[in-house]
Amino acid sequence: MSEKIMTECHYSEVESRSSHFHNAYEMLFIRRGSGVIEVGGQEHHVGADTLMFFSNLEEHVTRIQTRPFHRYFVKLDPDRLNRGLSTPWQLSIFKNRPQGFIPYVNVGEYAQEIDGLFRLLLRESRQGGEYSDELVLSVVRQILILTYRCEPSRFALCDQEEQRSCAQMQHWIETHFTENVQIKDITENFFISSSHFCRTFKRATGYTPKQYLMLNRVAHAKELLVHSDLRISEISRRSGFMDESNFTRYFKRETGNTPSEYRKLMEGR
Image (cartoon, rainbow, N blue to C red; front, side, top):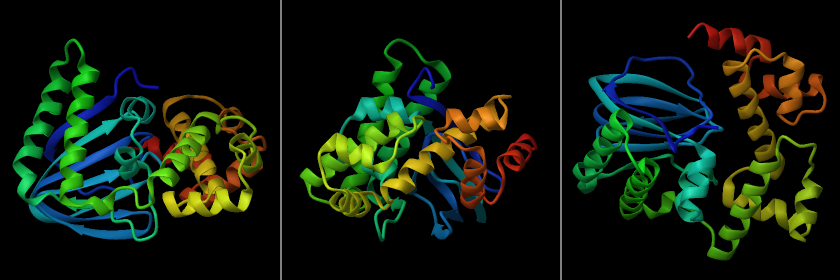
């Protein structure tokens, strides 16, 4: 886990590159140029003054179409941001991908204000100081509020009671995925029927409960593959997979590579 909410912040011209993953939430704010961002197998054509949001479960590819291509990007620690915001509708744009969700917003009339907020994050990442997390959290909230004013539909698409309930279940999965848990453990913990749980969770988040559980495990495994020298068997166990062959099979289905291949691929970047 990171020691700060904001783990990275940059403003620069970016080169085209291959699939990009990090176990963090990300905000990408394009100020000049245009490109194609591929997320989850879908391509999104985006231009200047576009703000994009990525979860820690998503890999994305950037292909530049017109230059100069200038952008800010900010990485945020999921656990610390989840605790800091603790507001389901604000977190939903990072975490939930319901049917028809579009991960970007053209911020239009708020572009200058949002640019100023990203500049503040950039300065904070370089200089820091007392109460840094509180400042970052305040700035992120302002960015989310302005984004909501531009396009409310990008946020939670379910009623407030269902939203709160699903947010609690997401949090439970995010804090227990390394354990040997199954979906029935979640339904028993929240005293709900399996069919109701699966239906409402899918509608609110875009994932089945099992998908969300497994994707959290895979994201954690990616982090360990890149940032540790642990054996594959140990990474499998620490990520919540009790069977290494099942881990390898599921990991390859999600990424197109075995864990060993993924580690070698990331070492070359």
